[in-house]
Picture 1: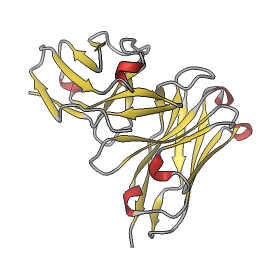
Picture 2: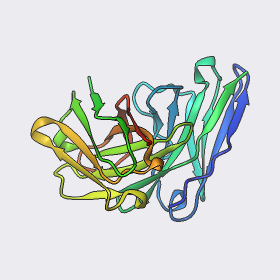
Picture 3: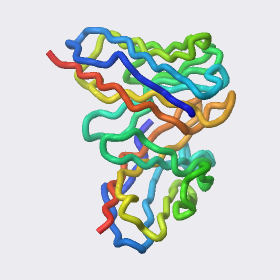
Picture 4: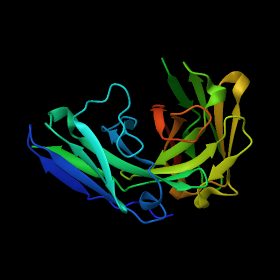
Length: 110
Length: 121
């Protein structure tokens, strides 16, 4: 199973909105409504930000939202804050009790 | 409070073995799928292995099949990863991760701090 495709980097200014895309196939993103997004700060463990395409775990800011269209999922962060600067990984269920991650996107808050 | 604490990482020569452990607390361990996810230096995340709550089903990424074995001891709230015939490309931080939902394999809502495995001569 190949990794999902994400842009290597995105950037934005405080207060702005950004969107990170995640492209897969009909065997992963397109086939299931089980897309998630993880935030990872340097040297830290990943943190679940979005699951089931557009659901937020308790405690995650509503500035984070997810969506999906066809084989592409997206994470949108509105009202960018400096603490949002991190790596972001998408993830999709691929069947047989398995998941595949994207290559990761480095978000820089200018 | 949910806690996952990995141990057992270290430096090992190619072809060697290591056994990783993950001590879980703060939730009913026996109700959740558990996973090992790794991250090579400067690289992305990769699911290595999953195990069903009762230990009756396992999943492995192709690159570790036949070399790694995931197991659990529910009575001791512990998850393990036995890694044999290690290769340089297995060098990574290995995370223990808990599935969100009870009984169903799902996304990972809690992660340990990770343990570094370095395979080098």
